[in-house]
Amino acid sequence: MSKSPKVITLGCRLNAFESEIMRTQAENAGLENTVIFNTCAVTSEAERQARQQIRKLRRENPDTRIIVSGCAAQIAPAKYGAMPEVDQVLGNEEKLKIESYSPDKSQDKILVSDIMRATEIAGHLISGFQSRSRAFVQIQQGCDHRCTFCIIPFGRGNSRSVPIDHIIDQVGHLTEQGYQEVVFTGVDISSYGGDLPGRPNLGQMTQCLLAAVPELQRLRLSSLDPAVIDYQLMDLIAAEPRLMPHIHLSVQAGSDLILKRMKRRHNRQDIIDLCARIRRLRPEVVFGADLITGFPTESDTMFEDTLRLVDDAGLTYLHVFPYSLRLETPAANMPQVADKVRKSRAAELRRKGEDTTAAYFEKLPGQTAKILVERNSQGYTETYAPVRLDQEFEQGAIVSALITGSSPEGLIVELTP
Image (spheres, helix red, strand yellow):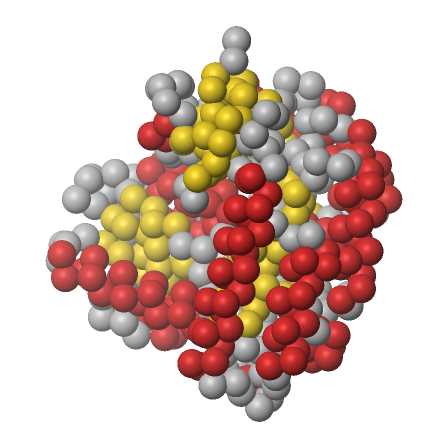
């Protein structure tokens, strides 16, 4: 085990951003021979896997200090504090503070404050990401909505936004370090700005950033709530080439009744209309979507509505999750769908997603693309299509290529001058 502290990141891109802060704080505090788990609580399965990894690490490294943080630790600190493998538990606020990582073993085992009282976001600047080609930048934290299946607001608190000037400083700093692509991340980035003076929206902030940091080559948005995409953002999607034509939507279902029971703020037709509108503004745009199968009360007919939505809205990349029961959520008290049915529907929807992705890839030969290079000669186009390159490039470089074909693993290309 390395003497320097190691952070194991589980879950979302926001965790990935925060893990860089945690690693720096732990190093500056002088921690050695320590592993910090930055956990996820989005599903019960995510928590189970986290506990499994913690136990495995302890078996293999009996002398290593283990700290557990992240959403799972914030929501259930006593559960992780009771694990004999765990030396310390830090909440989502505490994990970003250098004083939490004191090597002094006499510190309280559980340092977790009330996240619902948090009103600001710590203004840390990070310089990079270990083994990553693109940079994640936090623009927002927390969520004011209460979807019936979701526990995350209780791990992250209420929605609060990063001031525009700090986002500009952070992105400018990262471009100076050589990053050419940035991904905006948060819990509910569509709600950006509602708590700031003047209430700037996501589109206004994005426009300010792109004007202030002309060196930034590519900007991506993480998952958007389709109910609140502002008109300034729509204008940018239409006219700003540095904003990548890949829009990922938090759809969750294609049945209006299920969406209502989830307490979502959109319906099926809203998704179809939004995708059609954006496609008219920018024809090359590609849509991704988060979708849940087997939500409580979902019938075969309701699941068919979700399957049909993939074609009706023109969705290309599907992130499919079988519903995972959370005892602390309203959905846990609804009539449950059998686990076998949830998983079989997820498998069917994933096959549908593989078909739509393959159909999209088949349309691309003859077109040119700019590819952000990742490790092992892999990369991604502007529309987030994966590519295997036939020669080595520096990680993080952007190279031009002609698309000549496709395979199940991604696009086949020839490099162009």
